[in-house]
Image (cartoon, rainbow, N blue to C red):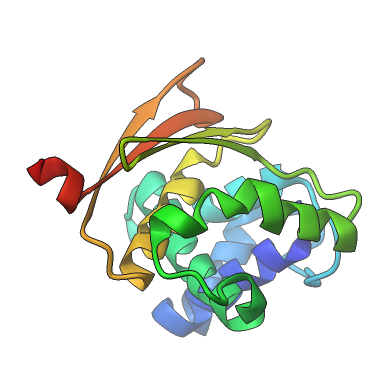
Length: 184
């Protein structure tokens, strides 16, 4: 997993909960490198899980809630760091299908070794079905990113998540129904 995800988690915890909590999270996680990550490095995704479990122990916030919150934070950071991906897009329904067809293509150019999740998108009668699949159990992270995207575009959209496959966080379908479709 790319180091930017690790560095952003630590920065979010420091900003939102304080340096002491971040230090205790790192110490409690007992990662192989004691929390020393670089944004361009590559690390085992299990260490991110260890960090979040440790943070949950420190805060008594459930792991899924922490991961969704982190996904929301990460969307905001991606918007700041990569504004070119958002240019000319006016809605979440227009943006989200581009994650697989454009954004992940560009990420692979920069990081050929990146192991990205896949997102299969289908729009039917204005409703977007977005299926997340990954070797890693981060459907909660994907959900946080999707929620933040909808908030970013201020779209009145109902989001429904259905865990699929082994229901271990590696596969989920997100159905995004715009309010205009719900009223029809």
